[in-house]
Length: 99
Image (cartoon, rainbow, N blue to C red):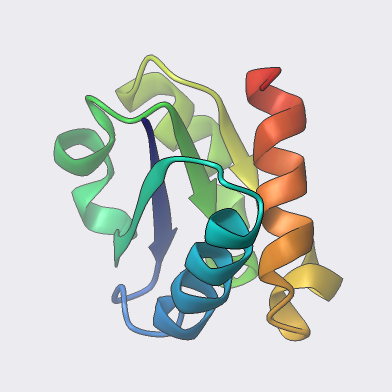
């Protein structure tokens, strides 16, 4: 089971995307645990994650978060985020993790 951590300003704005991602993952039988947190919690929340995704509003923190965790860190593509396209985000996760 993959652990996917989404980070945004307060962990709230990504909650809708988390639900869309969970639905897309279930439809594809992709076993994963997805949760959203504030970017300030990156080190704690990302320490055992398989991948950390940053919302567009905090994408400037990518390098800082990469220094705090040992997994891949990516900014969510703005179009996918704006459209709440959970399927596209899960697709990207699978590409990065080579699943």
